[in-house]
Image (cartoon, rainbow, N blue to C red; front, side, top):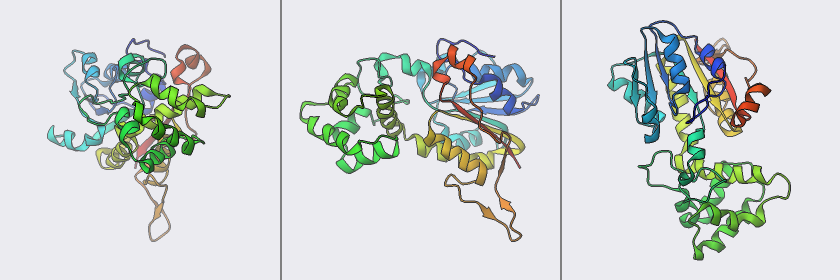
Length: 301
C-alpha cells in the first residue's frame, strides 16, 4: 500500500504497520511524524489506544490530524523518555522511527537540504537551533571539517575538499550554489549526483547531530518498550543502518554482545526480520526517495 502525500510519501507503509503488530488500546510512538503518513495508518489500526507523535520541525505540526488519540510533541526524539514521563507514560507497545529527511524538507528550496536549489546553507530540522551548514563550512577548524566529512559520508577526497573550503572562505560560502562551485573540482566524473548527496548528507548529519540523537533514541527503547512490544526503524544510509543493526543484534550500537554466566546472550531485542526489508521496484518507481530505505523490526524480549 502506497499513500500519496504532498508533504511526504510514507515509505514501506504496509511493512511498518505490520511490523508494529498494533494491538487495540495500545500505546505507540511515531518519533518522526513529518507528514503524518505513518501516524495516520497507525490510528486506523489503534482502536481506543494512544499515539504520541514527535517531530522537531515546526512545519510538521501543521499536519497533525484532529484526533484525540494523537498527542503531538514538538521535540527531538532524543528526549523521548523525558517527555513520555511528563505525560505519565512509562512503557509503550511500539516505537516507529522513519529516519532521514522528509520529502517536504527536500522540496522546500530555502531549507538548504537539496542540491537542486540555490538557497542559504541551512539544513536545520529544528529552526530554533543555532548551528547551520553555513557556520560549519565558514567557521569549523580544519580538523573538525575532516571529522564531519569522514564520519558523515563515504567520500574519498576529503582532504582535497577541506582544503578547497578553507581556501574559499575569504569570499564566503553562504549558499548551496557557492558550496557546489567550491567543491566542483572534487566531484568525480562518474556518479557526480552521489558525490553531492554525500556532501550534503555529511553536513546535515553534523547540523542536526543525527548520529548521537539516533544512539540516544535506541538506548531508550530497551526501557520504554514493553516485553513483546515492537521497535520499527527505517534508515536511509549505511551509517544509520549499521547502528540500528548492531543495536538489535547485541543491545549496543557498537555491536558488543554481552553474555551471562552460562554463555547466553544478554540483549533486549530479538530481530523479527532476519533479512533487512527494502522497497519493491514498484514502490521505488512511484517514489524514487524510497530507493535507499532499509527497514529493521525487533521484538522486546
